[in-house]
View (cartoon, rainbow, N blue to C red):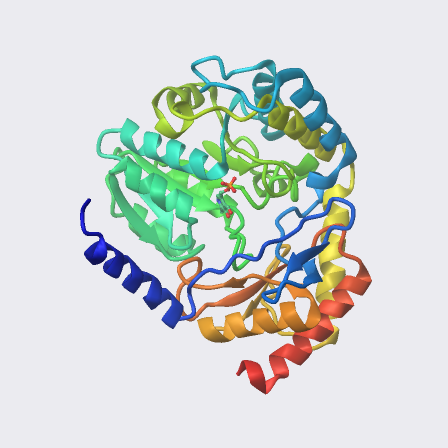
Length: 405
Ligand SMILES: Cc1ncc(COP(=O)(O)O)c(C=O)c1O
């Protein structure tokens, strides 16, 4: 047996450093209830059951709780079993995968779509494969891009340049220094999930055309929630059909699990053939694909759903303002209360949970840069005005409390 002491000491020192700076992650054991969401129960440190309201779920439209979605999930699980039993290449492609891919291509008005186990895997595989496809390729990446895009860019092993967040001028200054014939990919998110900022999509597309670049856009927090039928911010901003590749998830606005890319058939075929995170993993269970298809089609067919959700976000923000809670006035549904210190952020979240029954995950480094620690509030369609008022007064008291200074 090797002596593990040296290895364990080193690993412990890394964990201790996280604990010292308040960045160690503690997971709350949430007993999610389809009936009473956003209310849930959890077990306290002393073993008592407590109730709280979830203010950090990404199930924005509550599609994970939708009766038709659940019915599809159960029906197809009974028909086809719990799992796919193979990779897409080896018996793991079913009619449910194919139908879902057709529906996604329809949603985005693209020729094709390709389903992955998650949007993380889709970013990893697609950016990794695209960056390797073109000799001398360079990826221009927004400084706030999600970890999955950053990992995809690492996999590509091509050159990269980072442009300032949502800064078209900076992006243009980088592009203008590059030879026009050099292959380039501009990679950004339409909606940034932590600060709730929205990219200047039209402007980035204009630059891509001018400087001969492809565009790759992560719409993970926008699909379902924005645009006609939930097609996302690209569609809402009048840019449908002008982006080369879209990345989306089923795990937020659509309420299930999995991710995808949508693009022209040639690029989809290329990623399908060259992305390890697509091919060397078991495909999504057919039941998950069927439930997701029901969700996508239902979101698409409910007129006014996106507007109703935005109205709900406006009511929430109005109530926060009434309680003089300061938050970023961004144009999205993600409400950020900046705290700027990891330990304080955690102390506030702890007090909110244990004294007021309001569950907010403190967002600390490395999810956000140090100094930008924040509380990220997400309202869902099931949060009532009473829930909102309760959170607003709990936040006002907690932020003013000396205990959390
Ligand atoms: C911007 C962004 N892209 C990709 C992902 C990954 O999505 P998924 O949960 O489907 O892996 C996330 C997840 O939170 C995200 O915020």
